[in-house]
Each structure stands twice: as C-alpha cells, then as structure tokens.
Image 1 (cartoon, rainbow, N blue to C red):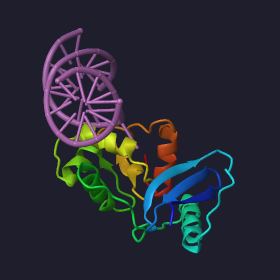
Image 2 (cartoon, rainbow, N blue to C red):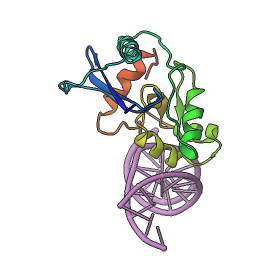
Image 3 (cartoon, chains in turn green, brown, yellow):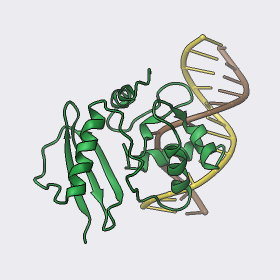
Amino acid sequence: MKPTLVQYAAPGWGVGEVWLDEDGRVFHSELPRPRPLSGLRAGSEPAQTLAGRLQAFFAGVAVSFHDVPLAIPDGFYGDCARALLTVPRGEVVTYGELAALAGYPGAARAAGTFCARCDLAPFLPVHRVVSASGLGSWGDLGVEYKRRLLELEDVAF
DNA sequence: TAATAATTACTCT
DNA sequence: AGAGTAATTATTA
C-alpha cells in the first residue's frame, strides 16, 4: 500500500493536507491554507473520518488526536514530539521548556528548529510552543495564524 | 567542518 | 525599561 493523501477543507482556514504511510500513520501534514484542491481525494474510509475530525478541530471543537498514530522519528525529534504530546490542551510551553521536557535542557534553539521543520501540526500541537516572552514566530503563515490556532483552544494570547 | 534556526539571557544605554 | 549582542544545542549541506 502506498502513501495516501487526505485533503480536508476547513471553513475560514483553507485546505489542508495529511499524508498517511502504508501503516496508516501520519508522517506529513500541512496546515490549512487558501489553496485549490488538487483533485486528489481521500479514498479510504478511515481517512474520511480523519478529515471530518480535522474539520471539527478547526471549527473550534475540542477534539484530541491522541489515537492517531504518528510517524515519530527516533532521537531528538522523537523526544521533542513525545514531550509535546504531554502538553494538555489549553496550555502553552516555551521553546526552552519543551527542550527541558524532552530531556535536553538549554536546547531551546534546537527545539525551535524542530518545530519549524516538523510538519505534523495539528496532530503535534506545535502551535502551543511559544517564545519565552511573547508569541514567537510562525514561519511563512505569520503569527496571526498562530494566534488563531491558540484561540481555537481558548488560549488568551 | 561550517553554517543555520520559529531562542534565551545578559549587558549597556 | 528598552534595545542590542553573545551564547548554547541539534540538524543540514
């Protein structure tokens, strides 16, 4: 079985993509963004369920993706991912705290690189990782996007 | 091996 | 208090 592409349209956000590997694990995810559908659609039934849950999430519903299997790598990235999964909904951590939780105190900068490179949002709540003072950055989508994501979880920022 | 990164803490106005 | 600079860690070319 080959990797599967799941597309979902989130009203007010755009179209996001989720890639599932042969075992049904998520190894890549792209946040919803205004963009035309490429015509590829979710074929399998679990994929449709996943798309529905994602739409609910971006509508403000408190859904959890804890039962969604993620393709978490070994090493530093894996530790960061696992540490991030322990962050409850509605809480935010700083890059430095995330690094400390992962077992690498002082690796705040590397944690930032991990969050930037990691494409597993919103399964991995990388939007809950903020700077020590302020909101931090959010790459190409802009901090406003990050603020909206946090508002979905009733986080005042 | 050198450069990079979605940071952090300290120092000097 | 505010702005600027150096420091520390892991990954990538």
